[in-house]
Image 1 (cartoon, one colour):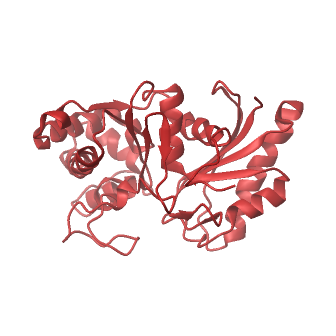
Image 2 (cartoon, helix red, strand yellow):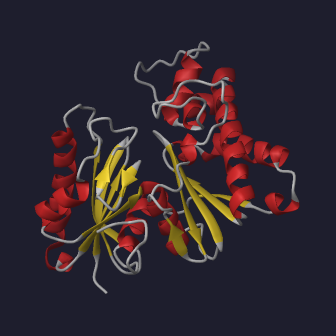
Length: 312
């Protein structure tokens, strides 16, 4: 088995690295996701990162296929992506463009699927029969791994947990609906809600990490923002568990790195809302691969047999 070139595309950052068959990550490059209306500027960031990895890896990257996990929605059969949190890309032909740029086969799946695959292969999801991997960051995404195999769904978009409805009368969502989990539990949504209730951080561009620091310091609005996010997320996780009969949920992403202020209220709401015994047995765990899970999972895509939901 050869190494794989793995690319992880999210609304906050884009990462690329070489991943060996055992899941070890090397030659990593990361850049912020461009805030632009120009689709080519976003693609240039992706292709340059990939080129940097290949150049740095040299002969080690010889024959490496390319696995891509992207925020969605996406059309894996057409190889196009339309991430809610990257408005410059709408039906962007990512697979064809990357395959042409790198002269290598490219496999695409959702970033939530890749996160779940990575955690199942080498992280906190190892050994789970029914795993939901959840990324809480600029958006909220997820992926299922059942009996060792990812479940992409007929359109390739299974796992859009962030667009499950938490409150039908809630805030409008960028997806066109309203009251989605993402309007409560994503980093930008938490910051927006806190600011609307009087939170005034010293940094004008304060993000969820600053909000978490203030929550640790006891700021009541910051604590309330994390509690609100945890309640919506717990409800969505329990709904998923009731449908799929999960045995484990692994949570990662930028917001989830504030585990000390997120997991307390999340577990409290999960326990409070869980009724049936099979829901109460679901294990909640933070990611152990941290920023590597999506890359390890994207590399694993290249070794899957003819995926039903991911396209090359």
